[in-house]
Image 1 (tube, rainbow, N blue to C red):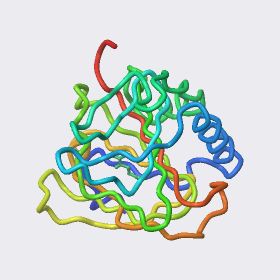
Image 2: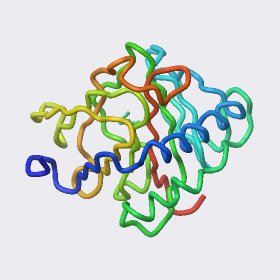
Image 3: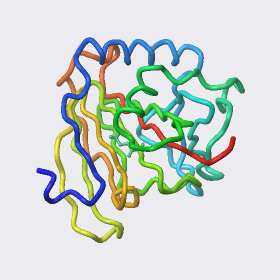
Image 4: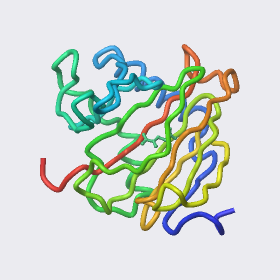
Length: 205
Ligand SMILES: O=C(O)CCC(=O)C(=O)O
């Protein structure tokens, strides 16, 4: 399967057991009480995103009409983001092949109908550090292309417990979520899919 993936992309199906997934979801539920999910907006147009977001870690990714950015605090509560769970720091050590720890973990919540357009993660100064992504809950159709938007893409389903790593050249490849398959998992208490995306943002905070 990896033959036609871009260089540096790794797909680790069923990396987390069901019991480990439940622990991660519990961390998300607790975090969401302190740092409630909010709906970001597209820069310039202000169009609401179809996903809901929150973050773990010293920095959190925020989508606002004024632009995408990393912030130390939640845009609505003004408080720091919840600490990064140890399980995610361990995952980073196990799979990232990168010395510095992640500074941000974006929590995306896809409810029925939510999707994420093709994009490259480009708001990090640490542009070479890999991005590590965990899928929890409902299955999703993931699309992965090349460094140019017009490059051919391939699509495959991600299931709960799967991990993807965008390292090497794949760090600059377009990717997105075309659709969610509602009801394919019972993991997320209110339903849908949670994606956790670990990122190094910059050298020094
Ligand atoms: O939900 C996913 O699997 C991908 C998330 C993603 O690409 C992002 O947050 O930039």
